Image 1: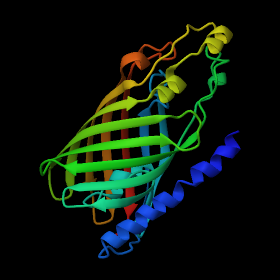
Image 2: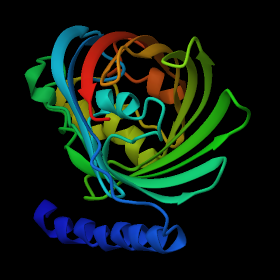
Image 3: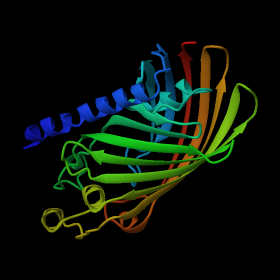
Length: 274
């Protein structure tokens, strides 16, 4: 039962708090802050990788920090950290930091997918929304080049599985207030994640008439993105970016995939504290 799994997921929260306490003990010079950011963005994207449903949407961005704990929407993360430390979306805390390397933990909500809204796929089991726990390690390779690796695990036992996402990012400073980033990404998922998002089991194939498709773990996505970020004034900051993501391997060959390549674009403006 999903309700029975929730206490198990909540049991992971003390570990996050324990990491926070350990990090404070390891670096007592860090002080509590009151950073915040509010803004809005417009984006053109697809809600799920592998679909053709391109949408233009407007939404709010927000982020704030209380001591070591950070709360942020994905669009606000880079803006709050403009000229500062990187901020994960969701609820996050830094566990360990050195001159060149950072280790952080975070929680984020992952939206599910209701297949019944599409008559072609009606009868497939829904992809359920879930809470994911993430552990991210990032390191500076040079003054402009950095690398990161993120592990993301479904905490509610809703067949969300495990993901690993690695990336390289090159930052070019145009001025003290403005820079652009070029990012390359590669994603790997275990069999549970891939079967939930791209698989069709025998029962679902019989119910929908779609071909049976099973898959295991492996690389499932590659991406490239470019983003310009600028502090327009002391408190106003803006960004604009474009991206391309493409499914790979058995995930790309799934009958559920109507478009292997997804293009995205976004622009935003936000107000932040000093």
